[in-house]
Amino acid sequence: MTRPDPPRVLREYAFIADGERGALIGPDGSIAWLCIPRWDSPAVFAQLLGGAGRYRVSPADSWHVWGGYYESGTLIWRSRWTGAGVTECREALALPSDPRRSVILRRIEAIDGPAKLEVELDIRPDFGQGKMTELSRSGGYWTGRSGGVWFRWSGGSKARQTDDGALAMTVTLDAGRHHDLVLELSGQPLDLPAPDADAAWQATEDGWSDAVPDCADLIADRDARHAYAILHGLTSSSGAMVAAATTSLPERLEGGRNYDYRFAWIRDQCYSGLAIAARGTHPLLEGTIRFLTERLLDDGQALEPAYAVDGQPIPGESKLRIPGYPGGAAVTGNKVRRQFQLDGLGEVLEVMAAAARLDLLTAENWQAVEITATAIGQRWTEPDAGLWELDDQHWTHSRLACVAGLRSIAAAAKGTPTGHGYRQAADWSALADKILASTSAAVHSTGRWQRSPDDTRVDASLLLPTIRGAVAIDDPRSQATLRAVADELSEDGYVYRFRHDPRPLHKAEGAFLLCGFWMAQATLLDRNPVEAARWFERNRAACGPAGLYTEEYDVHQRQSRGNLPQAFVHAAMLECAVRLSANPAASKTPC
Image (tube, rainbow, N blue to C red; front, side, top):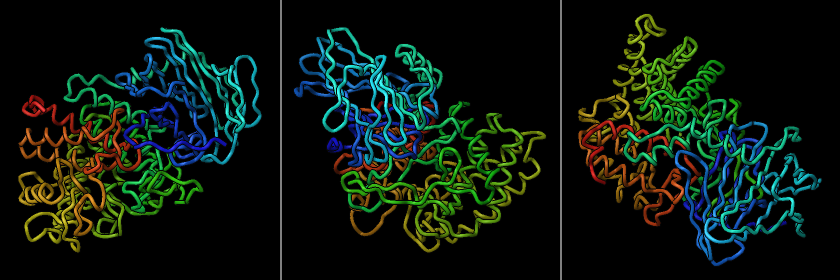
């Protein structure tokens, strides 16, 4: 079995996806992570976590430097190597996506001068535990299976089996020539015709063109389009968006926090929907509303915090028998199941209200709204795990999130002359007032919000209720909270969630990029567009060459921390770009 190559720092990986699954590509041209047939399935390429399996296309000459870039508005990545000449490998998961079959497109191109590359395919199911069997070469294809995964590989007919069972070959190209590799992977025998490379590339280009809007009207337009592409790539045909493509990438080395984010969080889905809605209607928003509605109609007040992309419950956490990313342990599943997260209900109402303002809600959607509002009315006095999924307390943010959601949906209902929910609008507003009044016990002696009645610390999440309209920015509590977050939780233009203990902030965890973008929005509401632009630009820069954000950013080492790419950070960046662009002073501010 091929010994896994050491993983790279996270900022060096690129990401390709088709909505049903996603892959990470390292600078050496190795696909180091891919789960088949869907996001939360076992990995067939698991080198990211120290497991076996890889699909590598890299220069034969070790004397080269690497780079790469995305074709604008797509997740079509171009790995680029400069040595004696310039060689690129165009990479994508083919669109339109098929839940039954993943198609990996790789086109090797000799850009400047001849090219010589080494290609290796080693499919290892179940996080590297199995091997390729039933190998057969016929008609220009290699076919075979690896555990419960069937594959067909075109463009690799000259490959030979190595001693450890992999397929390997050398590709030599004259200047200006290209060579196509098409790998199909499926959880069942492949009975569909093999795709034509040119046709598959054209369909993929068309798919991205249809999915990602032009963002020329926004500041940071290139990054805004990229955020749309990332969110589209993470979103299944069910409308469910996974929180990230990976599992077990530690947020802090040896911190014991290694989570599987290959599932759809209700809260994260709402954050994404709100970011899209800030600019207008889009299929991603419609998919969000559909997925949320289905979950609420099915589960009602027993709504889970997160689901698999097909709407099924997620499995509990279990450890894998592979080394894991350095500083962490490899796990699958997530213990979030059965938690109660009150703030998620408020976020559901917030995104439903945004959709209502765009005239997107049907009678069925309004039924889901009523279920959500009723659940808040019956459960808002209960302790919950909160946004950060900690111990059960009466978290201030959770209650204020419900205030914001209830007020937003009440206003939206009143805006529909005979619309669904109109009769309940007054009740929803009254409930919001009642919940807000109860939070007086969570006001610190300095006048700011505190985390809970029993926890006096400031928390960056307490910026969000002001952004969403639970409490006006001019309210003294909002002003005091904004100052406290800036003074106590920020460092070098980045924002931390809360202070864990007396240590310096960076000793406990990385800065949360989500919180940095919230700070930009809150500062913009406070009529300080120049300062808002500074927060935005600082946090926007916390990515690698591929423009991917993780959940946290190590301010001192300037490294990405946590699972990759983290959907809600891309959503927050997009929403922030939209809000800043709507403010003439901010959009004209040089950064």
